[in-house]
Image (spheres, rainbow, N blue to C red):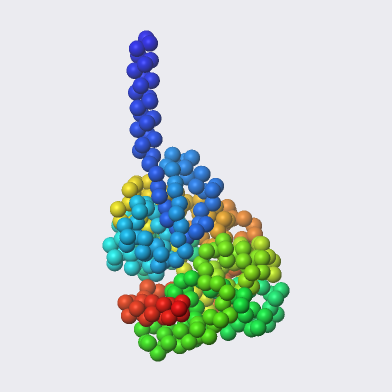
Length: 344
């Protein structure tokens, strides 16, 4: 009897150890502050898979990390225009999410999108717009144009933050100047550079670290920033006088996507993580935390009331919305030269 119990106990111990090993670990690299402790805790409790999260502050930084070998990351979250670049560079695993049941949860216009037309490499995680947020307690003038950002009035000079990303800065500047995104015309890119150089003396910081940008806006260290809609909402919760603008020139839209880097240590754990994050209730948890828009159907029932009428998340009718593009090699070279010149 005691021998049988010992055998059973040993067998059970081995099976539990096997289950623990099978559960694995998922190493995630994402934009800073993208996951609440609650969503990570829920995933770990539900699956037994441990999660580690590293962060980056630009798509360019992510690209460099993955080119250097990826440091064993299982999931990354690049913006949509970088997905084709990562595929072209052979930096992503093809895992065909479009064939999985959860893919039907994605809103129709983001299923098999232009940056991943077969739904082979990516799943939308969160989306939103990029525009201007400013402190209306300090500035009372017109807010219908990017002019306030690129040619700041005296009360805002020296209190401006610009995102530390050539793509996002160039896209917004191009909208303001009426220049096509990803221009390969040196004269047009020179126009953008001239605009940004004229603006630079009035820029206090170039930063894409969302938490720091919000804190600086709330404290008054800065009073205007090129920023993302959901992050602007979080900043407004800290300082109600902040306002997110919808300029007449339009706003840039972006979609951040979950992908599996080439050479992922635990691709099965990565697939489980992506499927989990694509469920309506879990996506709503992410939206409630980040305040950006969810790409998943059926989240409304789980959303915080404050999000249902937030101006940062509801684009006014008639607003021009332009999705950022994957630039060609010529445009990338010109953009790199522009940024190097601007940062001197």
